[in-house]
Length: 255
Image (cartoon, rainbow, N blue to C red):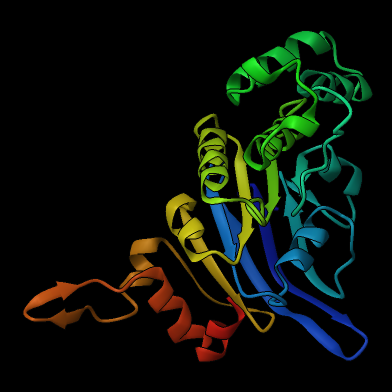
């Protein structure tokens, strides 16, 4: 395994005759936000499932926090937290009770203190005693991310974390994700929202038809297309321009 927090080489996965991954390669630097961008069905969730040891690859290698996902699965599972597309919170409990429960299940000392620290960190202290059923979508997702940080995992997988959220909820989650990386957590973010990748990611990889077709910083991706000139004003290409040019116009109807 390399010094990178996440290491993927030649990853392949098929479901019967459907080839989902066709040789995926990328690395994620420690303490960075890496966005895996692609349309529905591109294979983003399959990559996350393999990295989180929920699914076995047909070929290739992958590592998380220096551990091989196949031969050191237990060490890998101790190194990350996974937040799926829908908030996995108990609506009957309060926000604080959800966090205390997770801390106790992980046999950590001082579960109340851990809960209070995370509530403050994610601006949920005022709502700590309220039942989660009364939370907005953004608050639930922030609580869900907070729950995934109980025990301070070095790596967090966020699989389309803003699905179904309104604009305000998305902004709340974006702030939470930036705060994660600011504290040194490595974040692998899957998304189909171009603006989300553009706002959050240090590096962006576009996954299309089971392959990474481009991988770089936002500035590097924009340089793939020449700037458009409109009435003598130079216009830089957006991430959407890059994505649709590389993937093809069929992706426009899937967004």
